[in-house]
Image (cartoon, rainbow, N blue to C red; front, side, top):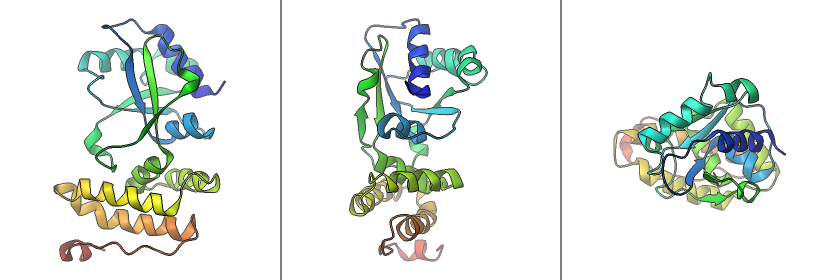
Length: 200
């Protein structure tokens, strides 16, 4: 069993139900890649997207049980962090997949972000680890160039209507780096408004 699966099962065992029904946990970042693609990389944080299922009470209980500094963190060297949706560079409707290996959880329904959407989200920060994760997914054949470009454009549309738009030129540069270095593909032409082009 994967360490991340063991960690999520431990959360399920330790959970004290706060209401009826199972809670959906939408897992993002490298943790989603581990659950979805059989990928392994040393990471401590398991990022969960904030959704209507994650009420303030549930968020507090989840972080108390499995957040940084918790007993589960000390036992598994992993912790849960809940991420605000608006902070992520993603299409308006991110694509999540059920995780069959965790179907048996009593209190949670775990969904993992699609590898292409994970790659798109990582183009925002694009740290060395982010680049490494994207390359690993490309090497596994999980990132098709056309699909990446399609999802990138949808994420760009979602960001282009507010103050977050000023970061888009940086994301385009990061996309070009992935196309050039990881996909061995030509850089795509991305149409930007004049004021954005000035920031490139």
